[in-house]
Image 1 (cartoon, helix red, strand yellow):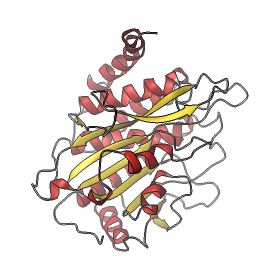
Image 2: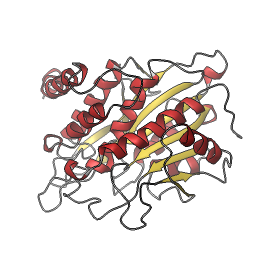
Image 3: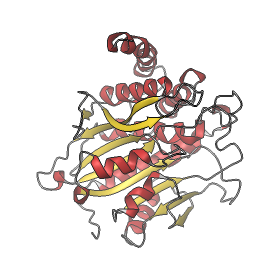
Image 4: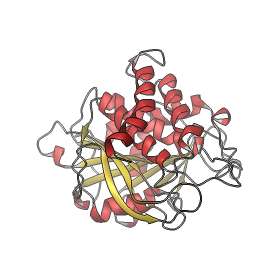
Length: 327
């Protein structure tokens, strides 16, 4: 299929959903997290139409185009990929993927990267990186795994934080990145590791990483009612924990439970392993993880809003000229 035909087929539903969200039907433009905006993003990203956003699939490409359209609508800029440049928000990530019957055979997948320049001429050369993984897993026994919690919830939060930060740029530059390949069984964290090894930003200029993953449910294995797990790189930057606690007190006031393991396969692990201060906001695992039953009707949107609110305050703190971290 030609590139023109391909884009025309995938951009139609993207544009329709973007029109709904921009119309004001799904939320007002206020300087706070909108549940309606979050709900609109999650319902689209976790719909059967995208087939589970499997790495390399048509559904993943549609999801990536949708996220790109939302970043553009919020006023973010594309960021040069450092490699093959598609002239937009998509950054190619080479990934030979065999056809496993899911329709996910491809030679290239994509990270999605949006950029808000920093207002300070010196601090603007440093980047606060806010991220979530966009991909999910192939069908199980013919049933689509839509990944509503994992990780449509985190992607929705990052999109909403991006929308609000873009209204009032901060001293440091902020990159919003939606990674591919975190759930790719053959090569976990593919997108975040490629970003660090071959991406557009020198590692030394990444001030901090904030990753948002699975924030719509309670943890049923290690219960912490109403709280969240903060996966932090304490050995890299001990004071980052204090910054997170301070941001939490200014808004969401969630019970915080710290975990230095960085969640194994979570993208925050890639940055911590590279010696970059990193935080992961994570509400925990549950029986629907990586199952077809991880659907929208099991999410708590007020909970997603709370964690997104913490993420917003945290990003504003970290991108301000008043916050310094050890490096």
